[in-house]
Length: 299
Image 1 (cartoon, one colour):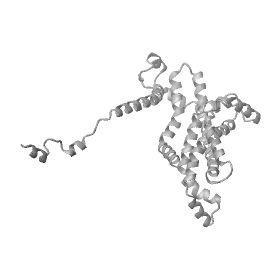
Image 2: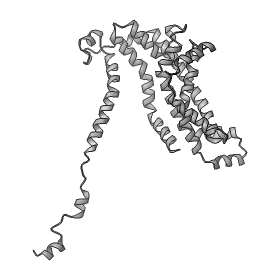
Image 3: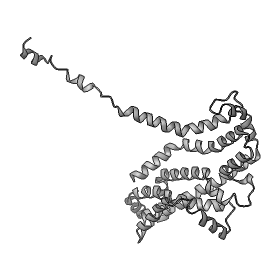
């Protein structure tokens, strides 16, 4: 075969489609998957250990702390579920979480509406003030907050936990909700005004439905944070006059662990039952949380 024939027929080159179809191996992909699996194992491993440990006897745990139940037992779970203290702790956590969530959503949407839709002097400074609240942890305010609650007569009761819980959750709530409200076109408000709607009617009939993804997001975050909150109830409730049966679950777990320190299986079962509601609630609503945060970023 002559050189001219070879060039015409293309026998000395690989076909272009074959080259285009080849995919180069990405050496970074296995490393990313390995890191993701490692992070997942670190996050999920302790939770699984606590749940599985609730099905073991204390003797089995002492003999082999890292093993599986042998045999599987339900006595620990039955004893915890039959304890009046556990249900009292659950009721206290429900009261605190629901009240805090309602307060965060109501006050957050009202404050975010004013910042997002009204023009007034100092608006940006007010928004910056709420943003700065993210850098103000509860541990810094522990002592002055305790003294303030004692002065106001709120120390030792549920209101002493609910009101500060709302205050510390407002910065995150404002940051998430303001972009939602700002993203709503002003033309919609002008059209509503032309149709005879007042500002409050526009707020209730248009703003709230359109900002519902953000409201659901901040509500879920506030509920989970209040349900798992430990430091604030410890400062306010544990030093008050409320009986231990009316303490929230994070404090109830501590007291149960102290009282049944020799019964490790029961302690693990109590801990599992205490974290299951918040974990299930968060997992069932994780798509709404991601959608709400995505909408806030886009806004």
